[in-house]
Amino acid sequence: MPTAKKILRIIMIGLLAIFIVMQFIQPARNVGSELKNIATVFPIPPKANKILVESCYDCHSNNTNYPWYSRIQPAAWWMDGHVKEGKKRLNFSEFTAYPLYKQFHKLEEVTDEIENDEMPLKSYNWIHPKMTSDDKIILLSWASATRDKMKLMYPPDSLVKPSAR
Image 1 (cartoon, rainbow, N blue to C red):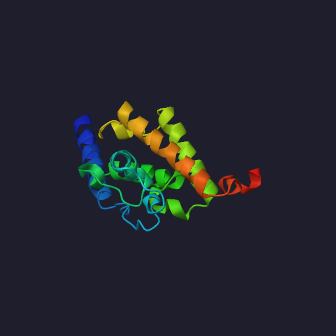
Image 2: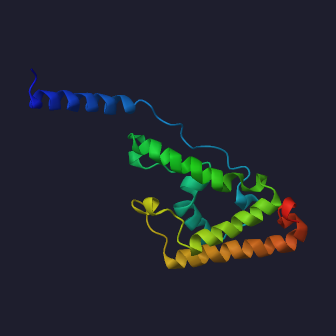
């Protein structure tokens, strides 16, 4: 009859083997095109762009800046899930491919998420520098100015979802 020590050793070896095998199952990297990036239509002031790149683009663009731990499972899967969810909700790299009403609405959502401290995610802030209140003011100002610019550039009904007209 195996002792508790032997059973624990077998369990630990099994867990180590599973951990090692997991390292060979890597998600695809988020590296892609920027041809439809928001900046191609709406200029972004340098300070706002720096904040977007440092605090938003990892999850909300086609180009994630991967940290050292991004190749270690299960952290890589967790990070991949955040990136996929972030891009599904808002992708600055594909922004100009959105219909105008969606672009306008997404900028409203940016404002809401920042004002309600829902973005960036708390888990993102564990390792990345936190957005300062000045950073938030800069992004809020940029989003508001861009919405105002859209109101001048496009007919009002193009900025409203068709079913809401």
